[in-house]
Each structure stands twice: as structure tokens, then as C-alpha cells.
Image (cartoon, rainbow, N blue to C red; front, side, top):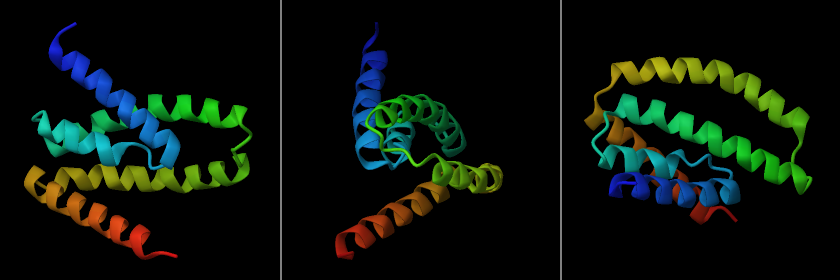
Amino acid sequence: MDTNSFIIIASGLIVGIGASFTGLGGGFLMIPLLLFLGLSAQKAVGTSFLGILIISASALIAHNKLVHVDYKLGILLGVGGIIGAQIGARLTDHISTAGFKKVFAVILIGLAVYLFVKK
């Protein structure tokens, strides 16, 4: 196994723990890593979703065993998410990687501020 493969697997481990613990899906950690590795914004987002799919399936199994899953609510969120995902994927084609990094950073900062000040 080469060094890059080891780093990516180790990063996946960290993302898996963070995603399963926080429910944030891991993209907030995976996207910066993939951009750092030189992927375009579009390729980073698409690749991240494949990783998130695998991580999310595993996290769902673990949380199901702990009886932490509201299936009705999750399915309803998923139905809306299917539509939003199609729109979001097409939006990435209309933004440069540099522009994407700025938008992504603003979203992360906004989320951090919200979580910090929320009581």
C-alpha cells in the first residue's frame, strides 16, 4: 500500500468517526482533504459523495442497532434531499474551484458560528 492510500484510508477513518458521531455526513472534512489532494471542486464533491454513501450506510447500521433511527423522518428528509441533490450537483458545473472553496468556507464558518452561539 502506498503512502497516499494509507493517508486516504486514515482520513476515511477520521471522517467515519466524525460523521457517525455528529451526523454531518463527513463532507465537511472530506471535501477539504480532496481539494488539498488537487481534485477539482466538481470531482471532490462527487468523490466525497461516494465515500459518504459508504460511511453513511455503515453509520446507519450502527445507529440502528442502538435504536437511534426515526425511519419515517429519515425517509421524508431523503425524499427532499433527492430533489435538492439533483439541483446541487448541477450547480457545481457553474462554479470554479476557487469560487467553490469560498462558498464552502462561508458555509462552514456560518455553521460554526450558528453552533457556537446557539443555546
